[in-house]
Image (cartoon, rainbow, N blue to C red; front, side):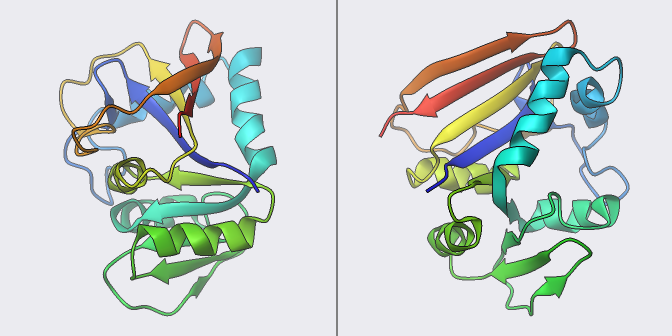
Length: 190
């Protein structure tokens, strides 16, 4: 069985999107800075960190807000695998070019169970701050992969808000550096 992986680019002050996220600004104001490492002067370490998740992913869990602001930008599922949207709204699956979006209205545990069934022995990538927070709070995440970008956004969507008041122990399993970003991988203690 694969891992459930929180995979995010994050500012040094903990934001994964700038303020005022909407369809016109899917990463919020200034948030596009968090993803420059993917597109500008890509180093070997950065290329590796782009390639690895694509090779390991078997399913995606995405929050409804992330789906709403990202689906037009992506023009498909975020990866070419089944994607499960955590929502409160009942909705039929939405076929796309590579796979389909399945809307899960009965909680994060159900979304994870469906994603695991679809992924087989591959990993599940979790997208969206609220969805990641739900996974952490429920003890359902296995790994955190962060791209720490050397910028202070000052406002926006924080990754680690609302995760409860109990410490979550992490084990650092990898650190890769480039001038544009520091890649850090953490295993979550169970």
